[in-house]
Image (cartoon, rainbow over all chains, first blue to last red; front, top):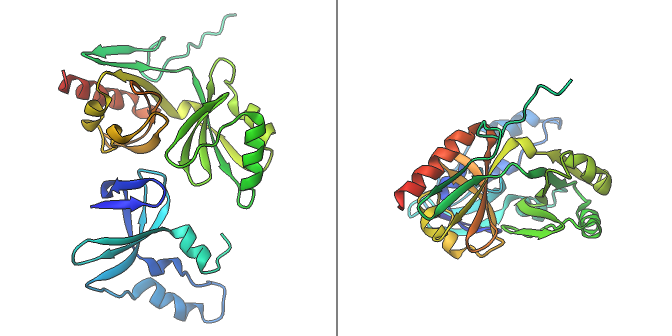
Length: 95
Length: 186
């Protein structure tokens, strides 16, 4: 499988580590009211789609950036690759 | 009293080792001082202008440059700075006053072993070492990839010269991989 890194171009999947559902970047605020109720689904509940799936990959043997990869779980076709940093910034995160 | 401590290269010899196997020459290069530089959040533009006035190039993704200092790209807003060891042994002491607190600078000199590799057919040689496509890499390309399970930086200096930076504590293992690949294309 080849992942088309937004900065470095096509790179072999061997250089990457898979983390999981891209929803993991929405970590709840642990100090807020009702944090426990939000952490239970954050930690344990995942969709398991047969088809398009947004997921986090880490370019460990490369530039060590986190990527949000949109991959079809049945065909392994990759339709979009974004820097996780840009995704978070688009959602109004400061960093 | 003379200093009883003798500096050794990464391969454990008093002087740098060089091996020529067929058309491939692998030479250990202990003459480069290294420091990593990372812009602090929100200070990226400041770092770029300080670097430009101090003659420190900050190349774009996947690239290396030489202009006074040498540098290659490590990641977003991160670079490795190269300088001659003889004049910049304490490279962080030179760089920190330039960038003050706009960037984080870490000495890297003794973390890495550098091999300079010359070969008439660099793509053919690197095809046997890693999945970085040397045939499409123009001079000035620099990247990190895996060679024999070791994370290494590859810097293409010219059509016939490549610098390879690998973890110094695995210098012998990396050297073994380089020599084995060179024998494979004899």
